[in-house]
Image (tube, rainbow, N blue to C red; front, top):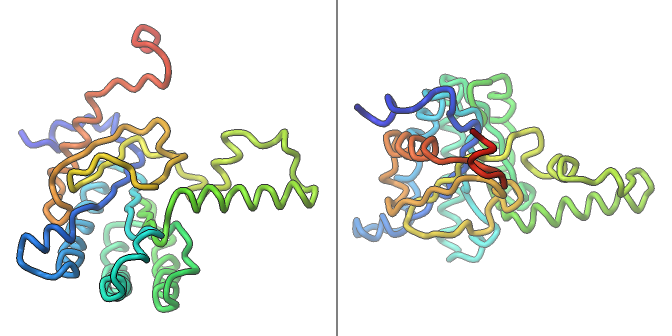
Length: 246
């Protein structure tokens, strides 16, 4: 029996977040340039998106390009931007076929204009899809997101349109890039590193973390399904004890 058949469909995480790590190392192992690894990683993205639709995951957030990634060698950044543009253009029909809505979070204004234009076009073309929402975290860091929210909240308080008594967990969540979406129940990181690298710090407060040594270009549906099965074996207590849950 495969892992997909072991999944309890009544307990599928509604939101999965993934740190897609290992593209560069995978390419190096193949004797190729790092850009080859990023290109190969796109195949994994397509497979995982389809896997999420198959089992009923409603939101998938992929850490695609962090604010820190701007510090990488210029040629790699350029290759990543070109890959992003071509992928968005080429994959929009597939997203529509799979009933997937495209969304983006992060400091989108810092991206090249071509990327922004293609993102907006793809968002509009997929806006009516409702099987799954695919969030691409682009020029994203959680510290940036939290600071941006704090600045906007402070501005409203200063101008007198917001009372500080109204600021609670729920309100703050509504000021983040993922407003209106449930927090991830499962976060997967490939590549063998055991850290969350400035990714969804607020949203991951009670998320189950799953780490694998597998490099991202090798990660496929069956590996996703295995992670979901592992998630379903865990007891999520949210500060309570087991007896309270049972």
